Amino acid sequence: MQKKILAATAAVFSYSFIFTVLSPIVPSLPLGFDMIVISSAAIIPSVLFLLFFGRNSGIEPDKPSLAMLFFLFSADFLLNLSSSFLGTPIEWLAGLAGFAAVAPAAVNDFSFFGILYVCIVGPIYEEIVYRKVLAGSLRDIGPNRALVLSALVFGLMHHDFYQGVGAFFGAFVYGYVFFRYSLVFSVVLHVANNSLATVISYLQNIGDYGSFAIVLIAFALAIVFVVGLARIVRNLRKNGRTASTEVQVPIAGSAFIQLLPVMLLVFYEAVMTFLESFSRVA
Image 1 (tube, helix red, strand yellow):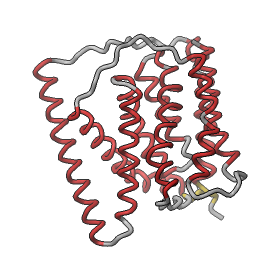
Image 2 (image 1 turned 60 degrees about the vertical axis):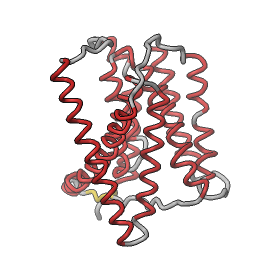
Image 3 (image 1 turned 90 degrees about the vertical axis):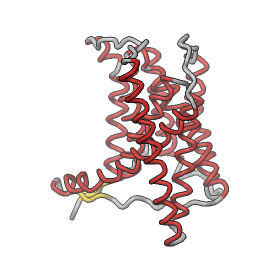
Image 4 (image 1 turned 45 degrees about the vertical axis):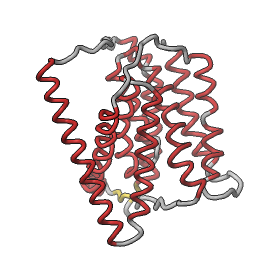
């Protein structure tokens, strides 16, 4: 288990580190295509990991209903929306320590390759790296712990405070779907979320009609979420809670040593996020 976690951590670290190294030196390429090239190079260690350690867990996944997928999609959207409100208090806390938040980079790349990367390539690669490789390798310590740790790393790896908060909460949805259903469905939700985010970015640029459309989308998804949550609560009351089929393993001292590589990865990503998201106030 320790060898597997160490190898998974190295693969995930490589994905983030290769982005950091190659982004400023990659040759001039069409907008968006450079990200596809860099991410394709960065995912190679994760592919090698899966070749050596990617054996089937033996757990037969469930198949989600279409209604459940819509509910989870709405939950993902609302979590991302609500996470934006955390920016103000965190900026205030940073200000008390003498730091100012760096304004988030504008993401309005509506080129063909830009959309292809954000909506298709990026979500597929990230689900492979952060769910299949990282969360999957941590499954033996318990899915809940694996879910939290992989979500933390996923949020921090964006090296952007504003984007990372939303990614952290979204990773709980993707991680749940990965463990409960399969990688395929976590990819589907991630693709859908990024595609909707791209649509909303476009709508923000077309004036009042775009703003009205965004409100309608948010309202519709809020209704889907409320109705879905009501149905889940009703079913729980009717049928009772179903015990998890996966046992939570107590973390002994040796397990903390096994998780040390992951904790070092969290520390690295946290430092990079802080350096790129905050600056010292003169």
